Image (cartoon, rainbow, N blue to C red):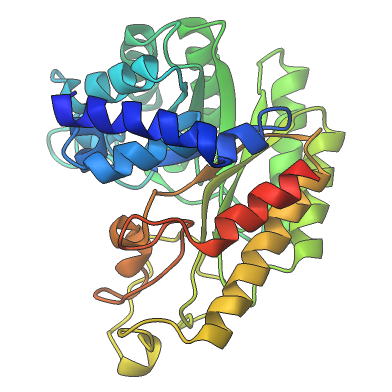
Length: 366
């Protein structure tokens, strides 16, 4: 970490004693985290690091631990950024999350196919999965505290996504991934992570998955409920129903990848489906010069209402993680329409906290 970053972090720690912070407000409720990008991990984004040190006590890797980055070739691993990520988390005494071991997207091209581009056999894929998981989890054993073992494997209607993993191994690829992760670090927490889990079909299949793993003696500690929300969907009641359903199965709930897009969606129910890609239209990017006060107030109210829900169920929720630190670096600026200007996070493009931050802190302290 650069000397400037260290100075900023030290200053932010001094400031946090004078002004209430998110991590102080939630210290007896749940972890409050953020996903880190390359600029923050490398120490270049000193403003982001200042906010991180002041307000957050957990981190997750946004992209640097995904297959295409960390395991680009079968016989080659690249731990440059992931090592920096873990070092940063340890220096700041963060609860560190690894994301994501098995995912159909951002997958290294070689992972599921042979030299001719044909699907490998079940045995070959099992061995590749085991090597991938053992190598990565083993490297950070005892340092990374929890893993998104499998990400986004189930569709809204409850069917399984027809990924390469599913084509070759069927539903069994998920229990295998959890088994390999458990063997690699028996003390690490293990999670399944997905979006739009307020859809009944997806929720029911995830619930069955929890039961299946437990019946087979394979540990699953929590379900990550991605919080890529819009202004109209989901309802608080839909989100709450899913929290209660998972808690009933004896696992914790984690609010992961949390952001609230203020922009109109070109299509309902997109969630975090990276295959969604819509042409730019001016009417889909209405706030290029800033957000009108009435719209900002509506966004503040919706963001606060979800944090009220999390506080209400703090006994069931172990972590809330924002998917990024500031609006400037949010992936929502380019998803599902590239080149837009979105305002989905708690800190603005000038690295300042939005008024809703203190509203949330006050709510947590009541």
